[in-house]
Length: 389
Image 1: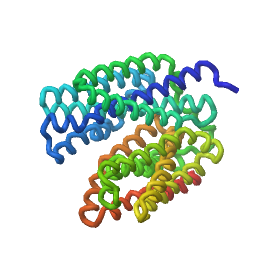
Image 2: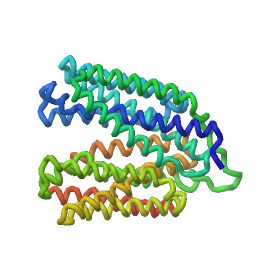
Image 3: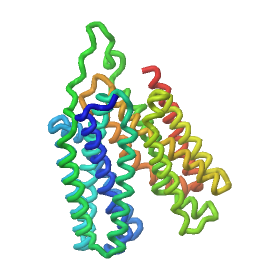
C-alpha cells in the first residue's frame, strides 16, 4: 500500500532537509585550501580553527532537544538552517576581511546550529518512519551524503570559476535556507509524549535509568563513524605513506569508503526490514571491524581498498539505527535520546583524530588506525546489550 499523500510529502520534505544540511558546511570545506592561504594560517592554527565546527556541536549540549520541544521540528529545521547559512556567511566574511577570529566564530556558530538542525531532521525522519511502519531513515541519511557531495562540488566549481567566497557562500546558503523553509511546511506534526505503561507494568525507568540505556547506543553510533573518520582525515595520509601510491591518487581511499557508505544507505532500509534492527546492526559493525582491520594490515593495495569499502558499506546503517533506538527509549523527554547520541558522536569526533595522531607519533599509523577498529569491535559488543533490554 502506498503512503498517504501527507506522509509522502513529509518524506520528500525531510529528504530536502537532510540534503541541504549536508550541502551547507561542505561547500565551505571545499574551499578550505583557499581559506588557509588567504589568512596565512600555519597547519597547526588552521587545524585549531576548523575544528570549531565540531566544537560548536559539542557546546550545543541539550539545546537541540529544548529548541525542538519549544518550537517543533519544522520550525527548528527552518530557523536553524537559515541561521546555519548565516553562520557560514559570517565565516566567509571573516576570510574576506582577513579576520581569523571571525572565521572561527562563524564555524563555532555553524556547528552549534548544525547540531539543532541534525536532531530536528532525524526526529522528523523517525516520526515519518513510525507513520509508515517500516525503515526509511538510512535513505534519509543517503540524502545527507548526496547533499555533502553536491555542496563540495558547488564549492569546487565556485573556486575554479573565481567566484568570491562571500558571494558563493551567501548565495548557496540562501538557496538552501529557502528550500528548507518551503519543505518544512510539509513536515508531519510532532508526536506527543509517550503513553504511560499500564498500571503494574515494569517501565524502563523502574528497571534501569533510561539515560543508562543511551550509553551503548552512543558507543554504537561512535563505532559507526570510525570508518568516516578514517576516510576523511587519514585514508589519504595512510595510502601515501604506507602504500606505494602517489599523492595524486591517495584520495581514492576517501572515495571508496564514502562511496560504499552512500550505496549502503540506499539499501540499508531493506536490510533492516529483512534482518531486523539488531541483526542488521551486528552485521554492519562486524563489517566495519573486519573492513578496517583488513584494510589497514593487508599488504596489497587493491584488496585493502576493497576491505575499506566493506567498512564503508557497514557504517551506512549504524548511526541511523542508533538514532532509531534512542528515540524509542521510554522514560525520556521527546528528542532527548537523539540529542544525547548526536552529542556523544560530536565529542568523539572532536577527540578521535588527535588521539590517532598522538598514537601514530608514539607507535605507527597502522597501529593507531587499528584503534579505530577496536572502537568498532566495542560497538559490536554493545549491540549484545540491546537484545537484553
